[in-house]
Length: 224
Image (cartoon, helix red, strand yellow):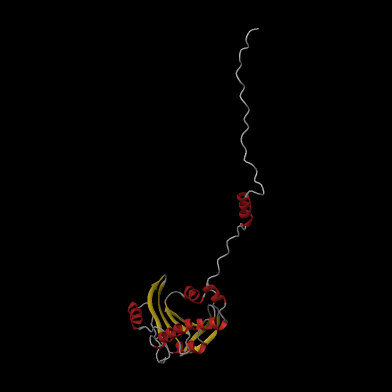
């Protein structure tokens, strides 16, 4: 019998070592489970508390708001009183009409009339003479004693063009009226205005404004 040839030993199967499952007697595992169960769940961040100033504003009473408004209005009232009392804020700007009358007379385009004896209550607030398409015009603006507006227009522009331009196309004659020895024609005008119109061969005179008719008549009758 021949001797048996020795064979290589097969490697032994080595199973990976596994950690033993923690038992109830394992104090470390028990402590870990206790800590895990004792951690409370995360809570959402609380909304920021409203600012104290906003809360104070929300709790302000109507009396507080009225006092705050009064504090704002008092300086405004004082400034307005100063403007009216010391700076003449309610007083219209009065102008000298003499240069406009002189310019119109120097042009010699039409006879120029000027009101006389109107009284201190009448204030001249505008005055000007200028050449326009088809002629020239002298225009004087007044503030009446009742605080209304009146305007005196003298022009050599043909009346069929001048009257619609000054009184609008809706202006219509309302009947004649005698003033200062002249026959004027009463007219309607724009808005709440009314007018007196004097037609002469070489000029047209218009007195127009939102003043009452008696004041317009006074201005027309004062022309000299």
